[in-house]
Image 1: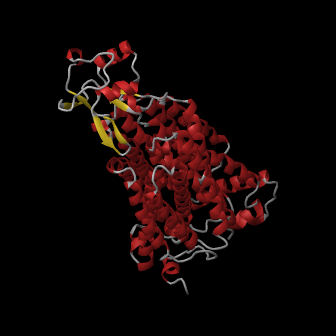
Image 2: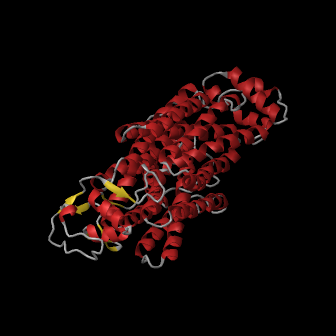
Image 3: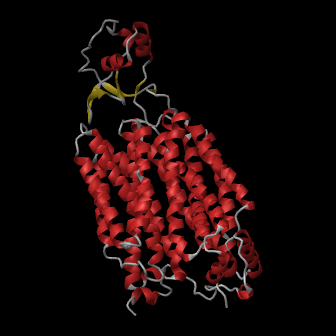
Length: 528
């Protein structure tokens, strides 16, 4: 009886073959960043105001500046930044029959009735074409922008469950390739959508394949390396998501049309189809399906690429989990400790998603330089990965995980209280919050795997991480709708969530140096 882990000792736990496959798989994390938070650029809402052809004619004839004509002809409203021309209302007037002349400095329109925009809007494009300006998703329709992000997360939710099932049933490699083919098709459909309803439908389908494919890549690479390398490989695989976050503002800066930006984000998925020739099926999965000869052949090919020779042991290669019992959802909540783990981990997945996406999407409504803000906050994700790799083996999982949440929560509260005049200080504190929540997000993934026994591990991660997608559905509504009331209100909600999450983490057991649990008894009676 030889298990795959025994054979890996001979093949090499992280040899040339695994490094090559790992490097190729890391590329898969990069376009996902563009899919996940591309809304900041694709759904950018510029300054806008009611269009009135008579005002436009007068403005051109008199050579007025935009600011002057808006101040003169639009109702003034109080907003968080002082008194400004209204974006959504105009006076009920026929400008051709008023006393509007080129030297008008101000008009007494205090008693004139107001109405919602009748002839659409004018936009201060600043060189960006977003789907907001193309489909006029402003004022009464502005909530529809939230749907762009919510539908994506609905796709994530269904897709990660469905593709997770397909990966267990038909193999990692086939599921990975099929999801990429699906991403390539739906991604291009998003780019050519003729109206907003079809855009949302295609966006849901796009989400269906993108996250599922990414998760399968994660599973495949962790199944090919030795147990000691799994954690590092997992954290670095996620770190390439941060590389994608850095590339996004650079791409968006040069590609100003949202449809072309969508095409560029989708192109890599076409390229990933070539992995058919370069990435093998997971031998662990083949063994679990009793396809021993295929597993042996792939293992021999890996050894050859790593310049290692195999002993006779390979002839007795068997699956160490073949006889494992099948898992059910009830296993996750039937016993007290399992129930506690499931609840706390689910809450942490939810919080990470809401706060992470919320803080990124907030950059799009602050009115600063979106590209620079996005780039700075993206750079702050890199220390997160290294802080994790540095602390988890020295300090453990529980304290860094709880601290990351609590620091993020505190930073959200403090940012909300700092006045706008202290711009750089405010930005710096917000960035610390971003660092904290990135760290918490990257840690929940592997803490989740360490708190469930082997036979129910995959199911446990799938169930808990569905709350990540539910968080993603809620996040845009929390951010954009509450920010209308008070720009900093979402931060108060984010801070409260992160604090609670951090407190709950302290109730979990420490898993550093503890072997992975195999049965529910290992979880319920850890001292045995």
